[in-house]
Amino acid sequence: MDDKTKTVSLRLSSSLIEELKQEAEIEKINFNALISKILGNHVLWEKYERKVGLLPMTKPFVKYAIQKLTEQEIMHLAEVIEKDTFSDILNFMKGDYTIDDFIEILRTWLNVAWMQHDIEKKNNTVIFKIQHDLGKNWSLYVKTLATELFHDILEKKLEVKLTKTTITLVFPTE
Image (tube, rainbow, N blue to C red):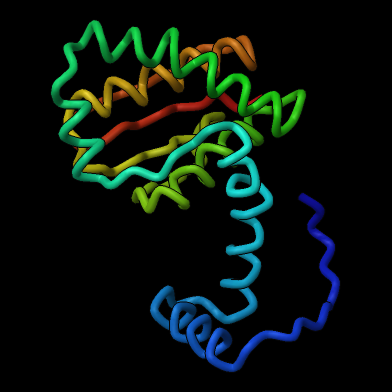
């Protein structure tokens, strides 16, 4: 996105403004930063959700459903079924990607999914840590999907470390 800023005026209801100010206070960010975050998430992810067939699911449902699958079923789901869907989503959103674009889309997805994550730049890499409580099958699913997409889109290898509740993706910098 363009780093230049512009000032705009919006007419919003007083109750909406108060709700947003409370949210900003909870998030420990200023009102303007919250509005920018909300609009940025919309532009990067939310406007595509329905267009490409993404459905909201509750965390308990996803955790239960994914625990019922074998490791082979998880890998098949990620490598064959989901990879094609996510490739279509990414192509729909934008044609060409850099590593930074890939990381930004991953970060946005995690933000809208309310999944905790941390990004650190270190020694020609970007280390992306994801914290979840969805079990080892979820870790395997994300690992398989991320490595397949990263290889297909950027033709690069992605290093991944897993535990039952965390996923660490180590992206090479360009």
